[in-house]
Image (cartoon, rainbow, N blue to C red):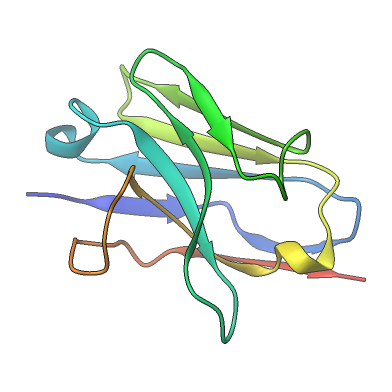
Length: 116
């Protein structure tokens, strides 16, 4: 059974930081490159960052240099450290396997709001 539980979101001023966590069930975490996605109001969900099981990372240009994705394979947990936050980072953030589609299982996400 797939389970994804995101946490760590909140309200922060521009320039601030947040650390998101995602607890994933073993069935998905053990085989997958994991990723963080976000969806802003009125926009499509977009890929923010991904990390392979071995730790290779890739970031969207909009967050490169500000966000850091990491994972703890022993805890089945993925993290997203977000620094120098901007109002345009405001969105609901989700974790899932890389290349997840709308029809896959998605968790509830965690809301990040950045005030200017």
